[in-house]
Length: 639
Image (cartoon, rainbow, N blue to C red):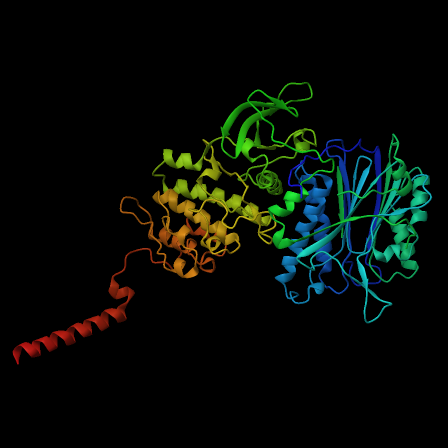
């Protein structure tokens, strides 16, 4: 197993032009469970054009939700995936994430015992990068390509279907997204030697129409009309198609034909380890494909360790950068800090005329001692990938290389993020040992807004602490460092750390070996609030040593009330609830906790009450017992 991380390298020049015609209809069925999406690269920076098609499973009543989600999400994640990943790594990682999310959704639904009726669908993806085509396939849709001048079309997919044991004349779908925790992915590749035509189709089309003849006509024509796919679909419908019908036709015009090897000319396929739109039998030579399988519970760092290898086999190392160096149009102006794990620089970007822009960015490279650690390198990639999914003024941004005008394929291993000015909240707390309650509310509300933005994208931060929050001179707060982040519905997919982040801020459930939830981030936010108020931790260091539920139940919350500080009792009550060791007894949402810091809960007592009012029955019983006891003493003494 090769655990070395390699860089993605550019493959070949961009084809001169793409023409696309797409159409999908429900046909004779009541609802259309098919979906498609595509993104055509607009320039050399973005490189890859992506075409995706999904077919719903007829046994499911919610399969259309899965199809729409899979196609849209694949395009979205592919466009923002780390530039260091090869095409194969990006596509397979995304497909495994889609499978994990759909599988989890099915397991949480009434279909948990009948997954074939849950959120399931097939998925076929064609990615064109220069003159190179990669196809990734799950299910029974088809991807065909015919190069100009070729005698026959090449079928780049094989159906994942099995013959029924009870009825040999029937077949059933044996592989689909969302059915199992693991997923089989077929991968095939092809180098285009000339202008070509593609067809991505569901079985409602290719079982009733001979697509190679249509692809041949498209190659012969000078253009591809917008309604071409609709015409083909209607023809399939008129020939008796009884399923949903979806077809993507793609014409690729290559300005400078590529001289191919004899192998490419003979077989047309090799086995190999911006505009965006969405919408809800061929006799060919046998195609070799590579199949990848991984179980979701084990696709954390171990999966990426083996899948980060680029197709060219060229190892990636962290550059030994110093202040003043230039790399990929980035000039390192000064070093922010260095640690045992990483080196961080402030850099400027060179403009087209050779000058550097004024807006600085942060360049992070792994420390030399960690360059041979795939886990460390993976953390760099996942951190930037997660931050690109979130749009919030209170979460660190990691722009794509395309957005920055940088080469799409970096020449060395590093990450780029926005430069957040200010100081960490840890330093701010030192400079402001007794902040006002209003200052603390303002900070917590901003951090809470950033966490909510992460949660809306299904991401847990899992390492919220003072050092991971930047605060500007104007008081603006930004969450940084998503190196420990994970998906809410697939927490083990990208991280295997049992206790992520700092132990003093980690939620109790992590110490029990449980997966985190949004209430885990809520606990960390409450610890942050408590520390800013009191300068200490609610359970001191005891929580980190409690590894069983019985031990955690013995922990006692230490009140935040302090005679030296004017802290309302209802604030302390809100913190006590948010810091409960049982996640089910905390606030149900971040917004509820944030609201409770500013507005008292009417059910909470806001002033001191005498014991007789709080527990009148107890007081009366005690008085009666005291009177009885006093009477007995009197009788004994005077008799």
